[in-house]
Length: 337
Image (cartoon, rainbow, N blue to C red; front, top):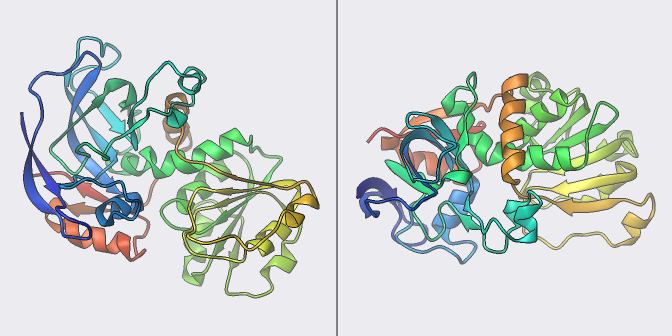
């Protein structure tokens, strides 16, 4: 089977049209999805540039995929031909280890990524294990659904795992591709929500997307005003910050959760955690059941990714926007070859 795609041939290079070969037949659990839309995540840029040292070239990125089921393996009985589905970062797991058995497939030691060692979503078709292709609920526009499969589940999962409710005060650090969704999810869960950003021009949008308060991090006094006021801080940023100041804003037993990965050594000691029994954690995507919950929650509460829809012919320009951190807030490709 010949599939048209866009691939990068060496680290940091431009994506070019290419043809990839896939087997004509499907394994029992596989699904063949004709890609309609694919979001561009900063992780795609990391793969293109081989920042993580795991990229194999030629590389077809893309893991925020929305498309229509074209073919099904004989065991893929939970999906139907013509159904719209979403595919995220993960494309397979072992299904029998302790983590898979407990609904944490994303922690499976044998997990497979959608676009690592295999062609991803910047292609005409994407073939993955059907158990990682999730029906998209009616009522979510497909181009807005695409970012939910990675950015959406990345911020939804820790909010649910740490049981954020109307009794909690949540802060979101960084109002970008992840943060603008975190604001909406936290507000829909009933939390009091505070947005933290270096960009004062984002205040109006942050308030519209769910924040009750907006804090500009250019204000040197921000931690004094919010000292011991927050139960949960979710950090979506990749830039270094003074994390001691954020720890001071946590209430006793408060949690600082990283879903972005700053490339730095943290500037605090265990002593900053001992006072108040504070917790630091990290989280990536979520298991299959959590992704299904997230999609239904997004439909029910009208959570909407703010996207810029880009024709496939402008794929390299869109990649550059994401690489520069200039997306407002997610770039999504319309996959018409």
